[in-house]
Image (cartoon, rainbow over the protein chains, first blue to last red):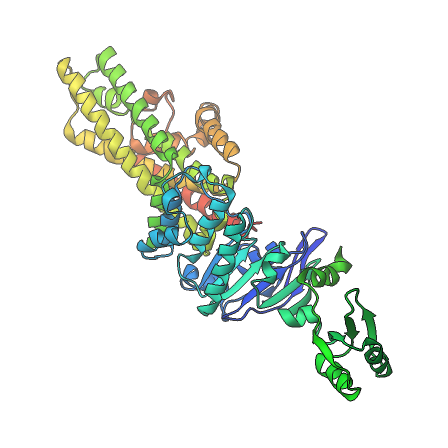
Length: 292
Length: 247
């Protein structure tokens, strides 16, 4: 998507947002409540008209795709179903509209664990079952792109683990997966790339290690048998150092390679050396701080 | 378009609303037919309209069509429907065609049931029966009107998202405002799409349906005017649907 903007009255919901999602990767789309995530996804899917900018799939707007459900599968945050229709019939409607083989309906009901509840009316489904039904609907056309808005809402822990596996499986099959969630712990374990927005604006995007680590501000964790000597040597090189309670050192502005070189020059034995990354939650709070 | 039409027909068949309203239409039609057949003594001239024009499917299909579209908003299924059919006019056209088909089939089914009941009762009572040709013509005209009102209802539902407002509005227009307009300003009321034009298109006496001696338009022009109403409502409903953001 390129330069997407949307304003509702005096509220700028999305402002000049641009990012792309790669095939074969899971991209996490994160931001605080009201950041513009759902509006962005709806613009991407042609449900909301942007004031400016474009959103496309391999160069084609969603509405211009020949068989949209065969290219893009989506689960929206408030995915709703006719309460009086059974899960199976809901999928039958979508299979007919998308010209998908009817056999896909039963296969997907099986895959999402709803085979035994397929003929029950949706009004009797739990929230987790509705999420699974929404996922089955999104997967009907075996799409190249999956867009999931808060897919873990209402799922129990086994369900969350299942959905993580599904995201990874689809990415490994070469699908591009864009998933938004406010439950950061879920995303941290599942995503390859992240896009962070706040106040409708892009705050960061890229591979998760890059966003968490801060490529322009490397941070290294190191422990040695002679910390005093190492601290002195690192300070001499101009690096800022924090001392952790467990005896480790956090070195700002230096990569592990640079710290290792300093330690080797001083003949200091190291017992731990590696990049110190922020948690996704830390990164999220830091990147979105200005908007909250 | 064929795939979308198929999907809309599955939607119609897989909820209880359609079955309930179709059952209600059949029940009221048969009840009216039975009562008139049993309690009156129609003449050869009046039997066709008195006994065999009791099909109420037009009203029910109109309400069903309004429910069919406004229900997409009420149950928030519209986003999913438009993800499957992102060309919104195609979606509206498919829904319109589905209710045209539903209206036609429902009306024919009810007319046939009414005919069977009416023929049996009148035969037992040894009362005059209508000519087969006239009855077939009545069924054809009734089914055409039911189909047109199905289409009109879809377009009205696309214009008014709130289901309760849409249904109450259609009922008030059908039973109150349009008959009132026909009585007070007949030169305007005769072009009404809910009562005047359907009655004119079926070609039955306005007196037989409680419209007094209203000067209705001829059957052929009435059908064309109904089509014009549908075209206008489709254009307005389609334009609104295309512009709406689905938050």
